[in-house]
Length: 140
Image (cartoon, rainbow, N blue to C red; front, side, top):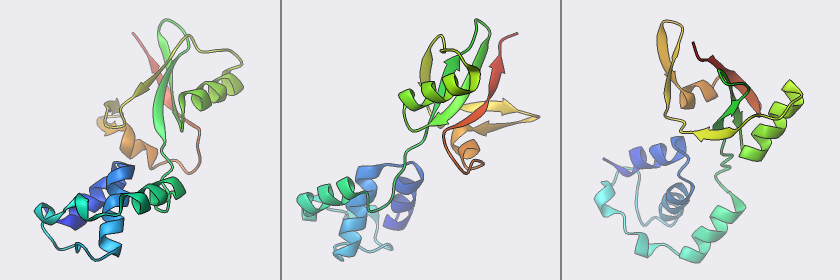
C-alpha cells in the first residue's frame, strides 16, 4: 500500500489523527504520496504542530454518525447526527416525544434497501445537511 491510498482511507474513514499526521508529514516533505507506507516514521512529525492541526481541524472533519432511536417495541428511527444528544433533540423535534433509547451504530453496518444492500457510510453521502432521518425499521 502506498501513502496516497492510506491518506485517502484516513479521510474516507474519518481517522482524524492519522489524516492530520500524514498531512503534516507530506507538507514537511518527510514522505511523498508515492512512498510505500513502510517509509512512514511518525517520530519525524512535530507532535505539537500536529496537535494544533487537529485542534484547528485544518482538514475540516465534521464527523457524522448514525443512531438508532427506539420509537416503540417494534419501530426504530435511524438518524444521522454529529452526537447522540443532537440525534435525540432532532428526534424530539420531529416526533414530539422522547425516544425509548438511543444507540450508535457503526457506519460500516450493512442493511437491506430495496433489492440490494447499502452501508450507512454510503447512505450518508446521499444527504446534504445534518441531522437527517436516514430511515425507519419495523420489526415483523
